[in-house]
Structure formats: C-alpha cells, structure tokens
Length: 252
Image (cartoon, rainbow, N blue to C red; front, side, top):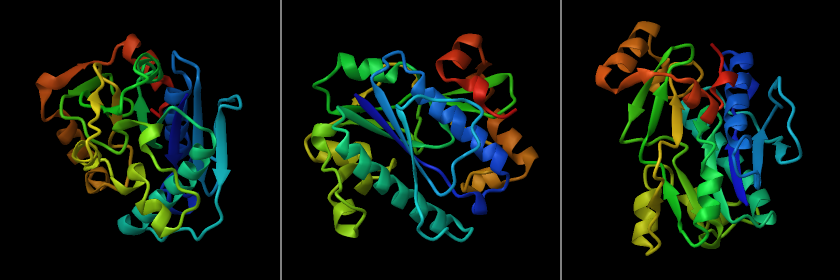
C-alpha cells in the first residue's frame, strides 16, 4: 500500500480559501485516482477544505488544534512540517509499503502506486521529470530537472515512523528530516539510494497566488513571463495529461 501524506495551510493565512480548497481537492484527486487502488491519503489541516467531490475511506482528514501560524514564509514552513509530522505518525500506524509526502497544491501521476507495486524491493524513487502548469492555461511546460515539495516516494522499511511530533521523533524520521532539496542525496549517503521514476510523474502548479514561494507572489505579468521563458518546453496540455493528473479539478 502507498500512503500519501499532505499538509494544508489554514484558511486564516490563505488569500482565497475557495482556491486553496480547489487546489487541495485536485492534489487529493491525483493521488486518489491511482490505477492501483491500494492507497491511503492522509490530509492534515486546521479546517476541512471545501471539497466538491466525495471520497471513500481511503482519504483520512486529521484536524489539528495547534496555533495557526502568522502569515510569513518561515512560520508557514514550520506549520507545514508540523502537520506532516502528524501525518507521518498516522501513516506509521497503517503499516504502508511506501510513503509519499505531497504539497497540497501539487499533482502526481496516476501511475505511481502501480510502479510501487511492481518494485516492492526498491528503496523508493524520485521524480526527475515532470511538468510546470499555470491554472487555466492550454499549455504545459516539461521540466527535466523537476524538484518541488512533492518529489519522492520512499520505502516504509527505511522510515522510522515518529510516535509523536516531538523534536527528537522528527529528527529520527528520515522522510521528515530530509526536505525535498536533500532527500535524494541523504538517502544515497545512507547507502539506500533512490531510483528514478521512469515517467513524468509530477506537476508543479505555479502562479495560483496562494503559494509562499516569492516567485508565486510576483505580479501576474512576471509569473506569465517566467512560465513562458522556455518556449521549447511548452506543449499543448492534452486530454491524456489532464486525465493522468486529475487536472480537471484545478481552479481556472
């Protein structure tokens, strides 16, 4: 079983809650619509998002009551990782085969769980190739050096799942200790290198206005210029891509 773990920002620090809810719903749908249905999704949040869809019991929503962060990037990241720690405590109780942490505004290919079933002895894998997409666009950009908050699936046998969210428990959990910038190198250094998923497996959704990244707080014109700066990477966003990544649930 593959367990996807997500952390959702609070409504109190969201610019447009309805948009945050739709982005989260699309992320959940991309995980929930895996071709291999042996999956679980854990979503940790302050407030339940306003979903239009209904899900079965493979989606578990955990609400937390710790203090809502102030609206600044550092506090947002601390809030995110605290919520992921809550999700990892629950994931450990489910005895999964693989775990994948996801940002609640990223999309994943519906082929990831099937890859995990076909490679039960793998240490896991990173997403090396993916896409960048701006909601509402007819175009999608291929990214061959993909690296965002949703970038690795890791074998549960290599994870020391935390029993609680104390600092010590978090430090002992490799998937929490290593962020997306270092997890590939850290796993290799530990002698348990990750494979590379052999297909484009993730979409970084950019320019939606509710991301803490400075590039996402730029003006609309600046975001469009950034998206279009590599025209050779652009491709029409086909029906097949939209179906594979559940893109129909994104805001427009």
